[in-house]
Length: 290
Image 1 (cartoon, rainbow, N blue to C red):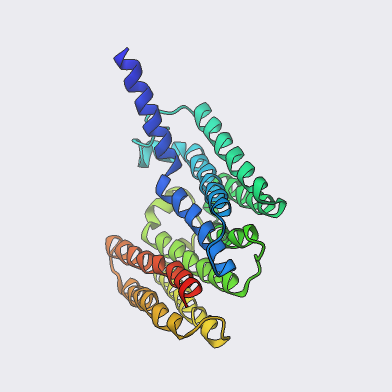
Image 2 (cartoon, rainbow, N blue to C red):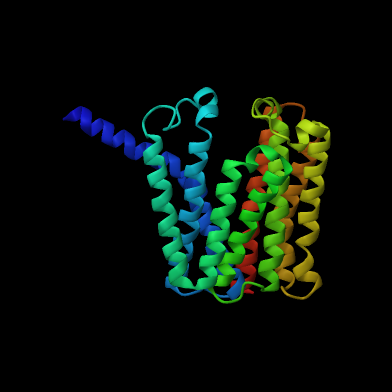
């Protein structure tokens, strides 16, 4: 009886691991942030709730499916993951993927047909990436970054203003920022990517070119961040606030360029990510309070 209980508990913990809750949670928050940025005020509780559920579960479906397609690689590189460890079966992974997908689609359908269409596009990108595009290098990086950017536009669709100039600006920033992080991360894992036959920029053109490319992309993010001021969309308070994440990102990018080891590079990427976390807060505060 106790063995059955232990097995059940391990399965629950394994299922939670597959969802990668911190990443799925972040996706849900991104959709909510897109709603607030587009509306310029707090949306209804219903829109926030369904937006979060949609982002969380559509993201979860892709993350769960990732473990399914990465099973053979994880047997070597991550044997303690739920699937290679035998905690969760491949059939259960497929069931979890279907359940997460259905919940995400239902939540988006409740909002609007447009939200459902965007969710389906996100889901298709996730499937294609996990199935075929992960090893394509730059194309795979583009797909991941596009998915990150479109979560904010999905938030705009939910509140009926997807093409709001501030939402689009932030989405473009998110795209270039994530693309820079993806390319830089590939440069830190050249040996692992070689085993997967990946065609990343770092493998094809070398680590230095990859890091230079990512630094250019981070610089683009900084430049684009001044657009709301240049076009008069946001006030001077935005300028003072945006300088904080901009400074963190640019200084970390310079350190990344000079990094010599994988560990040093990963630390710089984490610092860039931390700086990026301030970006949606700056946009939201500027919209709500000023």
